[in-house]
Amino acid sequence: MVSSTAAVSKRLKNYIDLTEQELDTLSRMIGPSRMISAGGEIVHEGQSGHRAFILQDGWVMSYKLLPEGARQIIDFQVPGDFLGLRSLLLRTSDHSFEAVTDVLVGEVKAQDMLSAFSSAPRLAMSILWSVSCDEAMVVEHLVNIGRRSAIERTAHFLLELGARLRSIGVGDAHGYPCPLSQYQLADTLGLSAIHINRVLRQLREQNLVTFQKGVVQFNDLKKLTELAEFEMGYLDQVGPVLVS
Amino acid sequence: MVSSTAAVSKRLKNYIDLTEQELDTLSRMIGPSRMISAGGEIVHEGQSGHRAFILQDGWVMSYKLLPEGARQIIDFQVPGDFLGLRSLLLRTSDHSFEAVTDVLVGEVKAQDMLSAFSSAPRLAMSILWSVSCDEAMVVEHLVNIGRRSAIERTAHFLLELGARLRSIGVGDAHGYPCPLSQYQLADTLGLSAIHINRVLRQLREQNLVTFQKGVVQFNDLKKLTELAEFEMGYLDQVGPVLVS
DNA sequence: CGTACGTTTGAAACTGCTCAATGCCTGTGG
DNA sequence: CCACAGGCATTGAGCAGTTTCAAACGTACG
Image 1: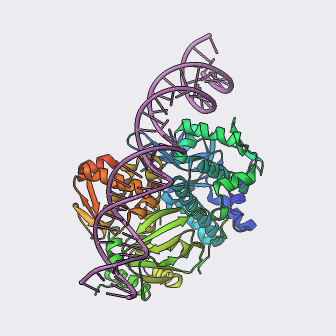
Image 2 (image 1 turned 90 degrees about the vertical axis):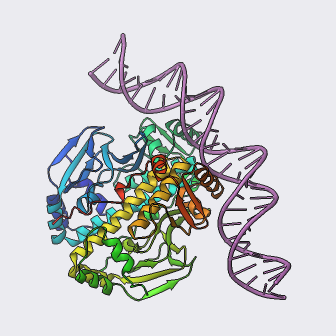
Image 3 (image 1 turned 45 degrees about the vertical axis):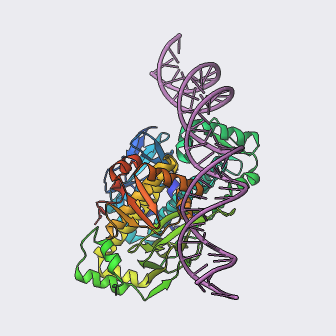
């Protein structure tokens, strides 16, 4: 069985190599794990709370709904990501979280997190770094939707997801497993599901990427990266400047 | 002459009423003011730094450029807003800041900010609240571009700006001064400048808003709010949950 | 075996974009 | 004080990219 900290520690190690002690503090910070099945709601918009979650297994999405029913997906979370950290530290969450697949989450109480932070400041920094990356991704998402064409957008998104997954040891330069539906893709990229379908076909026919049956397969990573103008600088941060 | 903290304190008071002492700490945190003329660059993407700024007068925009030259404006900052706080706390900035109008900024050094935080924790909370609002605005911006039509988007943006300005005492329910060009509007909303022009005309002809000669004038605030599905919940936060 | 969900395709309509041209205002230099 | 340039706003015409509606198909699951 997988340790409850496996994914998170892998993720945080991309920033600094945590010591045994720090990893230990991390694992004590995480409460009991809970299973939530696909489609289940994890945090509802407006719900306040002194708790956040660490995603240990499966995929989650965060999104907002418009009054008329439209949905905008803000971001996806993959194993090792935090859910609702901001709402824990600051206030009620301003968007909802839903499990995309069956999911395993570990709860983190505000209190436990604070004490972990004081006993392992480097751990705190690495978590802040992780939050900081999330924000950079939202900004990049904004750029993506605002200023790139449907095909570029889609390419960019698939590349970004690939890079994120590789950082937690899932998939490689050839592809990765991806449980998202075309509807979810559409609501992420600000397009209609029908159009996403056509765009995916184009990408396939041009031998750039194939996304079918839950698998993304890169056929020509170089050309795809050019098409998308993908730069992974915003993911691969140098890490906190660390004032002190 | 305007005190250097006038705008910021007005802004932060929307969250908690700061005491004399806290206001004093705030003003000591802010270094010497600097004037930057319209079009001047304040922070360049990728530039690291142990300093942030407080905008005292004028308008600033934060944006990202794509390789091919397209620009996506992330957000505008108005008096009382912070510039580059995140890059101060965490790492190099991932986007650029440019003065929209002539601008007066006060520099804040990381060190001064930290000591201000330790002597006035409520001040720290209110600043975190302010950052938190900024993030909520980026998310709302994403929803706006991703899932609303050109006319709804534009209406929503003009309303949001109005709400923000009112919170610092500029403008009222009838309108506000706005120095943005149609090009800037376009790069904010993911549209072409030409199309923004037509959208503004529609809004004017339908007697909803008039944006001309640097002034936004609400003609029918109610209908406009309905059109845009504008809810100001994400601006008017209850404030930090405040773990402790 | 039927239902539900996701994918795929076609056709028609619409939204927003590009290109091209014009007008207006402001600041600058002659 | 006028001429001119530069920046911004405005308008038209035609086109490309996306959406909507409708329908068919495949597959998984109860």
